[in-house]
Image (tube, rainbow, N blue to C red; front, side, top):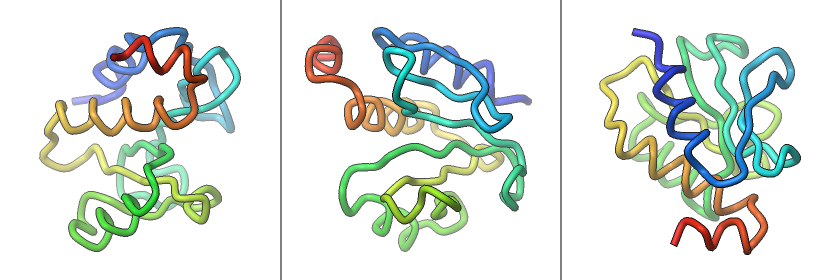
Length: 117
């Protein structure tokens, strides 16, 4: 089952979010400026569909160390703390929703982020 439609629903439900291609992949932006989630399908050596998104400080290392079969350091943006999340494993969509919301809060302007509260 293709995870993109469900991911799209989560991302586009967030305030002032939009979708467009970025580097050939569907990406989700806040105020059409800052990416908060990028969807890839084995584009950069991932074994299957995955998302890349900014993560709170320390979360990337903690998650990758705890569950390397689900989480990874994505190329190009991993050094900035972004998290890679595999979508071809047994998924907990409420966890994916939380990861996406955390990413959104990290890049959204304060007034937009406050709309989630």
